[in-house]
Length: 208
Picture (cartoon, rainbow, N blue to C red):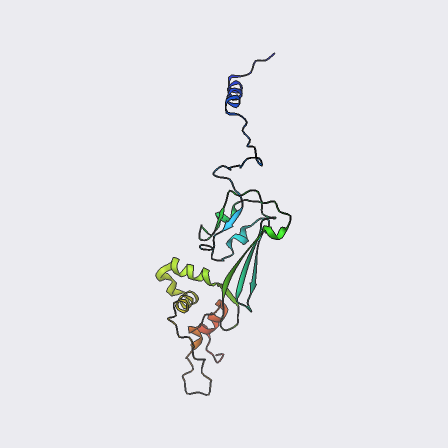
């Protein structure tokens, strides 16, 4: 017969004094440890709709649906697919847009109860209608970059429209038969996607 080692004997004595390690859940509330990864909860104050979390989600539990006609972006989070890996929290652009909570009991009979929906306003190209990004995301970038944002027309113009310091109606580009000089390009003062911005800066409005 082998006698127990001192370490094993110590563990047995501590177990007798402190009781079982496991909790009595569900008969008593269970408090997870500090680093427990439970239900990821988005914070509407800090979430900017940048889609970073959806790009790094392994089980595709975060879906982004853009509606250019309505100018709305919707983000759906499916907790029945979530594996609670914490990648959404680790790769969040603002570092506070989504946080892992201690909530672990997510059982439900209806899967629709395990879905979270967010809605963001989109910024669209004023020439071709292409999606530039979420308005909240662009305004966050303006605040983050500070004076450096003046080097990016979409960021600057989005901020000016939000602050209502931009002309509400920009005059259209002049017709070739008008007396205006051919180098006038009013499209520069519009919110454009990279492709349309390139055309406005490199080519004039007459295709030359």
